[in-house]
Image 1 (tube, rainbow, N blue to C red):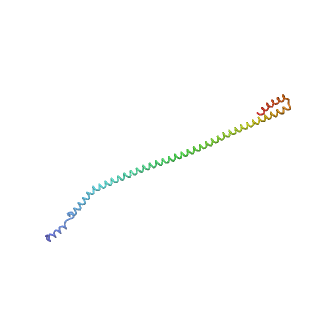
Image 2: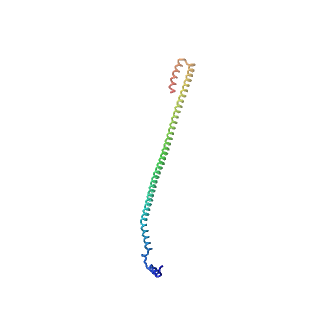
Image 3: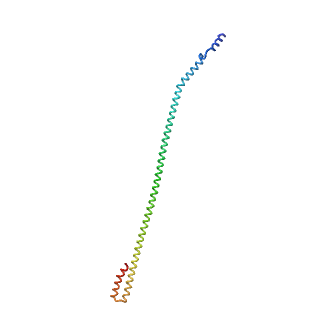
Amino acid sequence: MISAAYASEAGAGHAAVSFWQAPEFWVAIAFAIMVGAALKPLSRAIASALDIRAEKIKNRIDEANKLKEDAQEMLSAYQRKQREALKEAEDIVAHAKAEAERLAKQAAKDLEDSLKRREQQAVERIAQAEAKAVKEVRDIVVDIAIEAAEKAIAGNLPAAAAQSLIDGAIKDIGAKLN
């Protein structure tokens, strides 16, 4: 067993040990150095992983921006094509309307020309019928006049004088009718 004096001496000596001589201090220092040594490569690894992750995110953002620009270009192209198609459709409609108006005017002109031709033909037929009727009336009048003259002359005039009057009347009638 340990004597009481020895124990008191050991207790008093323990109190006189400075903090750098304490094993707990050196364990704490060793632990801090180990943590510091472990954190340095670990911090590099974490920083490297974060840099890689940031680069991936940047690449995704760049890719998304490129896709957005491509989509904008495609949208612009389709809008331009749509405007061109609408303009072409409007041009086709305008051309069709103009062509329809032109055809309507041409049809009206053709109808007017046809009506004028038919009117002219009707006027000519009427004139021909009128001329024919006048000729028939003249022929009838001449026949009646000749017959009346023959009857009048045959009863009152000698044959030679009657023939002379008939021949003169025939010559006069031809000149008077024209």
